[in-house]
Length: 466
Image (cartoon, rainbow, N blue to C red; front, top):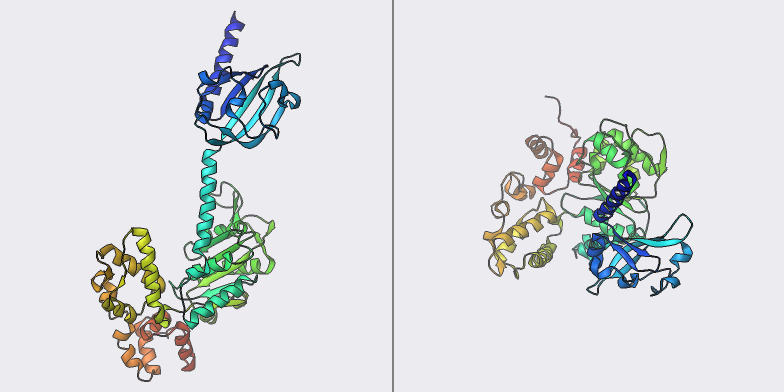
């Protein structure tokens, strides 16, 4: 009696497990008639257990049964001959008529004498996985669209040189150094090089070297092994390894610490990485693109950046001109961003008033193309007309701060019309805390130009001791 109760309990327990499974499970008797049909099969197929019981598995019209159409007669089904079928992706026909992507598996059940007593089939619904796959494919297509070369706007001679450089870089495996001020589109150039190269099918991995502390950046780039440091609870692949077969884009490369510079130099030379806490070297197949808004050569001269690494990185340099050096493209860029924002917001703004465009043309754009895009986006929030006007523009563009715009400062356009002297430069350096980039912004010159003036007049790169 006790054994009978135990057997009944076991059957109920197994049935409860089957009923609670996310996968569909159904059984058939030796004649191929459906004997059980769990709730997940009801959800996946649309057929209730009452509708399915007693029918054959032809009810769900599997698209792949040993490479043939599902036979109505179980005696003709090769499952009896094979004993089981390997898990395979296929489609089931839903009650409503649409196909459901699934993984289907089947096994024959025999008694102790080897006689077939039934068949068990499991069905895993792949609808959600297929949706995620489709989203990933669409995202990859959109990413490719974002990084198409014609998304980099520019018709000036300087930008035509950039386009030629991108095409040349995409056709090679050389290490690329993209230089330009913040907001000039360095990441777009990196993407255009990758998606126009033979590595386009591989990953494009982006790392901002200024966003992480040194110890975190090392683990991010090179990975680590379990126990390498507190919190390293498992092995972790670094971004260099993730980029294998594709491209890694290291933005703000000028921010790397001396220690990380040494490790990056080794990657460039050996094309291999060593995870933090590990002694094993791993080979990687990557293309390296770096970018910086800083004057790397000046940092070399200042002792902040390794000279050997600098020359390794600038095998093929690409310089992106600031927007103030290609003002003729401001109307083209503004029109591009207006069209993009119209699509995004549903508005139908046709352009920019002549007064607003004059402000755009006079502004120095220290934030470059990104600042222009943000200004258009700001205007879209306020503009309720067909044209963007001056009142729609950000305050810093409408009413610029005299301290930040070169032509309104003591050393702006008016003074630059006169001869630029050593004394004037020394005054500006003191005023700007010896920040060469800020001096350059105030007088409308690049940091490199300021550094050359300093070298010419034998002005030290660092402020003299008080």
